[in-house]
Image 1 (tube, rainbow, N blue to C red):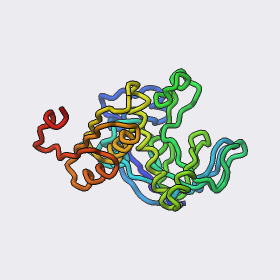
Image 2: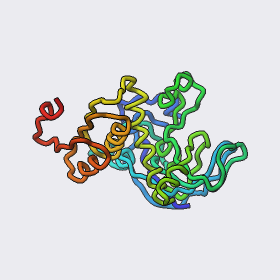
Image 3: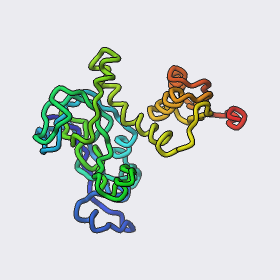
Image 4: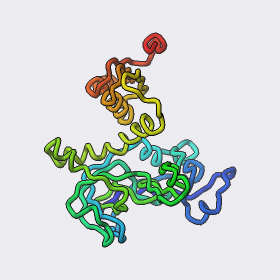
Length: 267
């Protein structure tokens, strides 16, 4: 299959102390301290085969996240800009949707032909953090497209437990291709949802909401706030087109923050 793979030199900075796990697995906690001279290329990779608890997904749509860009971009010293968990070489891409084309023998709730999106956080479900419900703080965390092969490829293997059907989206929009694009937005929308409703436990209908930045995650936050009953949703962005999108998704007011009296607008 074709895939977009990022490679980089394993070159820990002198003042960065590798722990034993990083040294043996090259699963690095602080990527910008270790990976140098990044390079991306489209090439051939072996077609994946499913493990017993995995499905193989034919990718229908995949987004380009700022994280993907920061893994490819380097500073003046040659080190990647992305500061987080990484392992290279690796196939990029974690915002995606697709159709299942093969299932492992222990998969029960998914079948060939199902349209799905998948979680980027690959949690173990067994550690203390997972058992407390904080799967994004999993002690054994892996990240699709960061430490395991991602979706900028024709096919991707994913454990069935991380997959979610998007058939209802397809039924609603009446287009499989459009559903794939919307399915690829599930992951960034989930970032906003988690921050707004899982981590903040004080949400009430009628709330006033201010969103700085109307990129994909900001726009998702605007739509979620509107759907959840916010009485005011004020959005700031320097881009006229993004401000226009913000209004379409439920913002009650939009502003260019450059030179604006932020306190006056918000208060």
